[in-house]
Image 1 (spheres, rainbow, N blue to C red):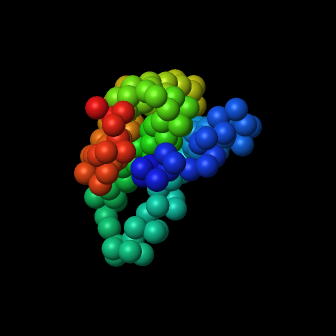
Image 2: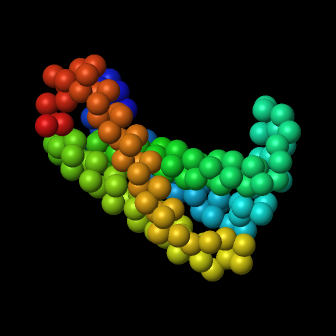
Length: 168
């Protein structure tokens, strides 16, 4: 989400279908990805089957008890980063959709979208036999989104603050 994105020619054609697809497709793809991962197939009892061999290939053999801790850490890191990136997709979409809004408004809307998707994901998982539903996961998801958005905000403020006149 660099300042050069704000001057892209597509952003000037707000009435076109191409603009709306270009603006909101990343959000839609992120939601579809979350829907695909919110299945029994991606439950912890299944992901260990392919994550552990990859981890052991990279770092060597590991005991079962230690693996359980690392597996949980990998899964929660996936939540943090995955929702961090969907939060950026929401931020980008609102940034282009509301060209005269303040950056904080776009961040707030992005956080609402992220929290809504994270909550729906956890609610859906509560119906799956091998998945759990946790408010803690929603908090991890939202923390990932907020963290990446603050990194982008800081980067934009440092690299070209004049082009972010609406960010204050």
